[in-house]
Image (tube, rainbow, N blue to C red):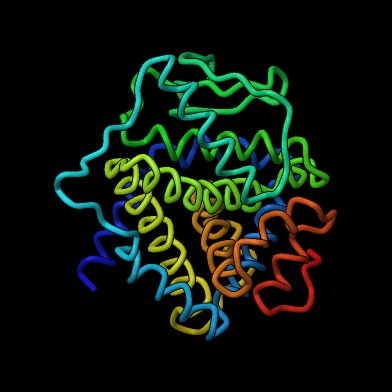
Length: 277
C-alpha cells in the first residue's frame, strides 16, 4: 500500500499544468473526451477488469530484469535518434501490422517548452527536446511514432479524443520499448518504461477508487467533468488499452486502428456492449 500511495502521489503531484490544459475546455471535443474517459473508467471498474488492472500494476516487475553485466545504454545524438526511430518503426509496425509514410526526427522544436517531445502531422516529423533524459528516449520515440501511425489510420487520430490517442500511444510504446530494450540489452530504457507504466496504472486505480468507488457510490458526470485533468486521459486510456490487451492479446492494436468506431470496439474488448457517447 505504501508503494501505491507513493506512485499515485508522484503521478498526480505536478499540478502546475492543470490550469494551462483547461484551455482545451473551449473546444467541443473536450466534452466528448470527458464523456469517453468516464465511460472507460466505468468499464475499468468492472470487477474482472479492475482485478486485471491491479495485477498489471502489482506485477510490473515482470518486465524481465537484466543482469548487472548487461547495463545497456540508450543512444543519444542525432545519429542515435535516427537509429532509435528505425528500431521503433520496426517494433510498432509489427504491432499494428502496417507500414507508414516516412517520418523525420530531430532535436528542437517550437512546442518543446510544453513537452519533452511531440509529433507534427503537418511536417510528418518528431521533435525531441535536447533536455530529455537518455532513458526516456526509446519510449518517447515509440509514443510519438505511434501518433504518426494514428494520423494515417482510418481513425484519423480518433477525432480529438485524447483518452484514445494518448492511451493507445502509451500502451503501444510500452510493448515496443520492452521488445527494443531486450533486443538491445538496454536496461535503462526498460526501467523507465516500467516506472512510467506503474505511475499511469496507479493513477487509473486511484481515479476508479475516487470517482467510482468513493463514499456514497459513483460520482455524477458533472462532478467528474468539474475535476477532470489532462493527466486523466493518459492514465485512463493507457490502463484501458493494457487491460484490453491482457483480455484479447496484442492484436487489438491493429484492430483499433482499422475501425471507424474505435471507442465502441475498445469498450467491447473490455466486456461492454455500447461504446456510444
